[in-house]
Image (cartoon, rainbow, N blue to C red; front, side):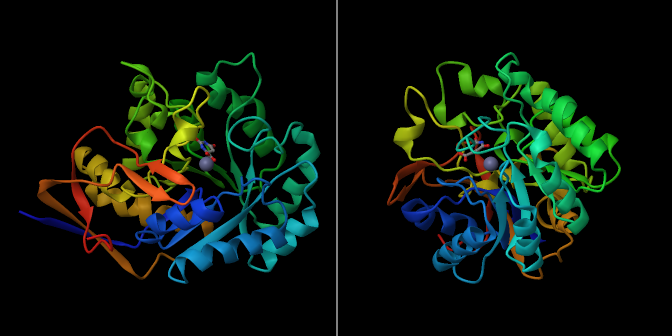
Length: 349
Ligand code: DOR
Ligand code: ZN
């Protein structure tokens, strides 16, 4: 028996597409299913000016074609010029600005050390209605890696929001009960993305029975109670929670190393895994909110008119274990359970 579910075409509100040969290899994996995506700016060097964002957007479109809309972001540094941010937004080049605390994650060295030094930019963004997308982890070496998100809320995020209440903020890739509770406690101007992989794995998946480098990402997956809180938030229908896959490819040799890079590559099977997770939670009727409606509403964009149909089959759906790119093979996220949902008429089939 086949069950079908048709949704407005989904969007990915947090995506790493990289550049060059990696971009060429992996962008089609997202463009196949998603209409739009918020594109992360943590290239080497990072995308810090409107002009750089425009050039990067053109490189993405050269790979994907016009059927996919990259929504560009700028990488916030202590030297960011508020006027450039506001002009890039006014001209339709950027949609948001990304805050990386310096040293928090991949290519974050140019990020923010002293949050007082970006006050002027945040004020200008609040005034112009430009959202701030937060990598929400402190980098204080005294703080345990599993506590870094919760501490960020108290030490950085809440003070910024109290000082600049008009600023629209997205807590990216939340991983804790604490973040879910914080979002729920704030009635306005705060949303949160949740990744596919954080709905599936907890920290045991990374560490039990051997280290699994392809499950290592940042923020690192937490204990099971946190994963359950994320599933509850994603499937609750609360419009403040929406999909941001944080699909973050690294070539396998960079992951399977003594100092492996952070990032799970989920673009290829994300819709299949999400349908399985929502089905399991008895919440298939809320999948469209999470993947197609809530994020658009937060960003003030229309829901896509185009649709995507998922189908559940009796036989297991399989995906390639890795995608070959000109920058090397990239392992596709393994959810660790069988998949029965797939995108109908996938370009692959
Ligand atoms: O796991 C991650 N990978 N988390 C991030 O914040 C960055 C990303 C990347 O760029 O690889
Ligand atoms: Zn990311």
